[in-house]
Length: 509
Ligand SMILES: Nc1ncnc2c1ncn2[C@@H]1O[C@H](COP(=O)(O)OP(=O)(O)OP(=O)(O)O)[C@@H](O)[C@H]1O
Ligand SMILES: [Mg+2]
Image (tube, rainbow, N blue to C red; front, side, top):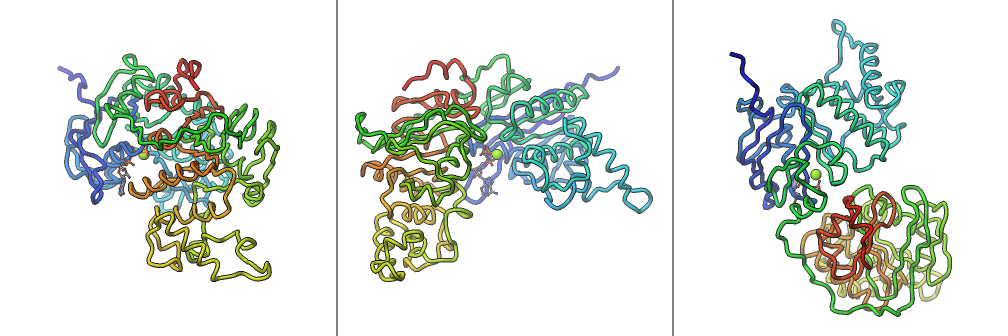
């Protein structure tokens, strides 16, 4: 009697993983079947990447079991997982920029003719794979550094295909792809499942799951909440399961902004690279959150505010006057203060003291005589800011790079506030900072708005958007698609951002 393969290709039970005090995974179960696409969803930090790292042998679980075709396996290294045909495209793929696409794909497992590398066969193989994923075969010999971001993103997918995967894990492959590129990706995924490959697909774009997934497992706080057939779900239902019973935190500032306060920032039909037809208003004393999933276009809109990208059409009005900053410096000169997401690169001078960082760019104001830089005054301003922001540091002379993320972030913010800006734009202000510092930054945002400054918080952290903002404007596909007031719930906003069109149309303000 021939046996019917009833066992799933992969079965994970009770997977748990701690990183120090962080419980990344508490109890995760997952069944993935050959020839099917299994979507894994959950809010940021739910444990999705950790679970697939265990599957890929990149992390060892503290507890739990993994079965492959019904047999228990120990996956203690990525090469063991690879030998079973488990290939992973990581959320942040590591490519060697100076190497060609072919070299990236075959490094460490070169095809050989005798003892020499068979370059021709490698190139041909890569050409075929690139073809399959919708890229031109001639890119095989091009260094990765010369590819577009979207093209580079597909290289790890080609690499996974070269490994003849029986299980392919894709950790957020679509975050930065355009709709056309996603279509090609889905085409590849469908070809693979038709050949019997089991696919695990992690994504925050819930709407696209309805075009590709067979089953959906929802994760929350390191646990798998459950698994459903895609036909039993809607975007809204998934959003509810992701958020769970979590009560929306309405820990907001009490002050309600004056609806008649002057409009400080207005974006009027703004169109540029990565966004189009954007409308937005922020009044004096108001906190508006621009919320979108990674790749939504919210970051591009922010970049155009500080002159990093130039809008193609439409207007940016500051207190009613059109402005067109062409650099962060020009943006600052018009009264816009900025706290960029990548504070390491753009925001601060790590080797300099807090005093220097707080006062950087304010030399004119600080130098009483207008001729030379007044160090005593620099330290005075820094000390008062350190106090106001409750920055934990032994001295304002300490180098900023040596501070914790949260404190460094506050120091960079301090520098922006010295100028009393009309508009403060913060991008992912609490990314990577601890809970305490997060609270303080949120409190500070409320305080700055209380002083009459207009504040725009660009964030992909939903609880943050709801906590700090008087209004939440949702960005999806490069456009502002929905707007919510103080009665916003996590489920409503998440569903709008993740592609619930009914909700986007019926938006409230
Ligand atoms: N190497 C690590 N050291 C410490 N903490 C970690 C490590 N890896 C993950 N974590 C923490 O474990 C939790 C789960 O992280 P994980 O990356 O699995 O989440 P995720 O669901 O993939 O989130 P995202 O949607 O943001 O990618 C988070 O709180 C994260 O900060
Ligand atoms: Mg992840």
